[in-house]
Image (tube, rainbow, N blue to C red):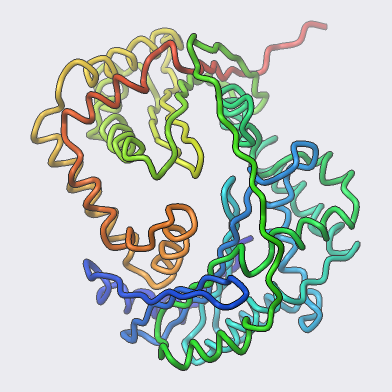
Length: 442
């Protein structure tokens, strides 16, 4: 869900950015009696406050026969509550100069609202209403079903290369729910009963499955009192029993093809299953993906796009998640270049990474990039709120907001080579040929 950003909030964000750069983020955290974890960050440099709630529910928590629920609730819980009429949520926020948004991953769902700080109490009330008094009825479900269908068409079905991630993950994961995407199945949503939606809400949208973050221009004691007032009486939910899934190792290359009617230029995607985001090796893979294809000075871009002119585009990224990750590298060919040619060129560069240490200059360049990214991630109040929630919920270590950069700084050139050798083997990957739709013969 996306709403137009208020000019007032944007101005405040710019004002606060200069004062938060490179500063250590102070915070206080505690639990309410109902299990709601609360994190407070006080920054009085600009009159803006973000109230956010992260729920520990994503696509991986869904029933395989009822997928798409977590993402559907991202939309559904803006429909209204017992005290907020249907369609009024957006009006309330915009009339007070605020902005709001929400997003879903395979691991969590996140809602936030940012206001001028004299609306702190309103932000708390809105999020407590979502948690305590949601209205889940037929008209809301039908309305949001249309919204999700349109999103599916725009982002997946009718978008060039829109299905590559879906196709990669169903091959990388055979047991784990990561094998389906957050958009889920429209058929599953269409066949779900109203009771199915109510049960999903009752199970996962409970205080003991959530983190509340209030960040910005606040007074700690006053904010604590207001949080207790709005959230303290919400009943604790039942303890959630989560399933665990262990994938069998990939021991031989998995070859896959997909024909996309929305493209004219094919692509090659090479995907490797990688460790959970809390694993040190996941951080190393972040550095490897940056080294290979982040920007025009990266190894693959310079080689395939600039020098040999074999590719229109190259890319590599490490998609780390709570249970597993997926490292994907790929390219789009130019002219007569084949996908096999691109694959060989990519493998040659990975092989160099495995057999030789990167230069000290390249290593320092990587460290500089990650330090800059780290500082930028904490340069706004809303960014800090998101980081605090994420580090607590998905890493079980809120202090990473200040010291995660130390992990990157400690990664050596030898580690980069060792991790590339461990995970980036052709026998341990999916090779996805992403092709234009074949012409039909009448």
